[in-house]
Length: 119
Image (cartoon, rainbow, N blue to C red; front, side):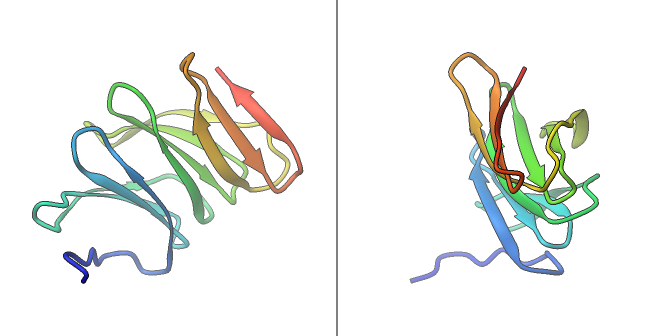
């Protein structure tokens, strides 16, 4: 049984992650990230800065989320303000996987056949 349907993206949702404050972030082929209040089903924020699909999301400490995109970048977002605090570059193809490491860094995987670790 489906308890809640979150509606708002213009194209398919291909990434999800749970935030420590109880909200959920979704990444889409429409190049956006939406942050949802799962108690109400309302979209609290729409994060825009990627130029291609958001393929991966990963919760980080202190209310931050990392997003990986087909535009070859990783962006670090502040989910309190909705601002992109940092854009990481280095991949030659789209980013398709992200992982938060215990030491606070972000590991990424890309269609360029490389895994990378960013400070």
